[in-house]
Amino acid sequence: MKLEVERLTAEPTPFSYEEDGGWWTARMPREASLPREVVEPFCVTGVAYRSGGSDDFLLEGTITGAFELECARCLARYRHRLREPFRFVLEPAGLRTPAEPEAAKALAREGMCLADEVELGWYRGSEIQLDSVCLELISLALPVKPLCRDDCAGLCPSCGADRNESPCTCSEAAPNSPFAVLATLRGDRS
Ligand SMILES: [Zn+2]
Ligand SMILES: [Zn+2]
Picture 1 (cartoon, rainbow, N blue to C red):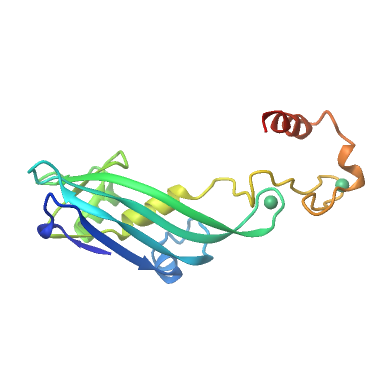
Picture 2 (cartoon, rainbow, N blue to C red; picture 1 turned 45 degrees about the horizontal axis):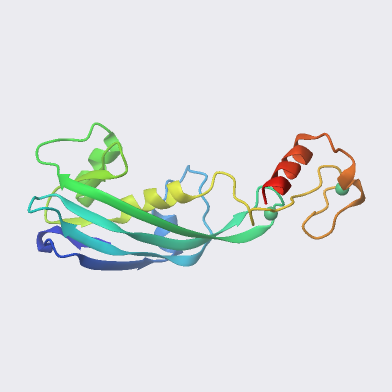
């Protein structure tokens, strides 16, 4: 995912990249508990342009893709689609060195890194690689608690039956449980 910075003007230049699961598994940190089952390639599309005659430039676009994840409530495997918009400003790093060792490495290796905020980054040289920033954006977009659907009924804590498929006989047993209260609240809202 290479972008030639030198060629950018004030006119938005479109870019588009596609990467498959191999790209993800080869680059993600080994120790991280991130999902590995990429079931749709990642597409990174957007535009890049210089802002107001300066050396700063803007990148904006969207990352899409899909993982197979396990639902935190019913434990079913399901296809989780990502659609993550992004927008950040890159300014010349000049003589500055990022305090974060990871960011300093990225700046040296890929010609860009993100600053403390995700919306701002630095670049150095005539071309940049977008791989690391895309990996980071995808990681941040992954849900902490994946759900196969917002109203997934989950498994019965008593008998283990999947309540999405059929209500079990013990489903009314604990009307005072926190889950029952939550279910009521949800019902009220919809
Ligand atoms: Zn579920
Ligand atoms: Zn049950």
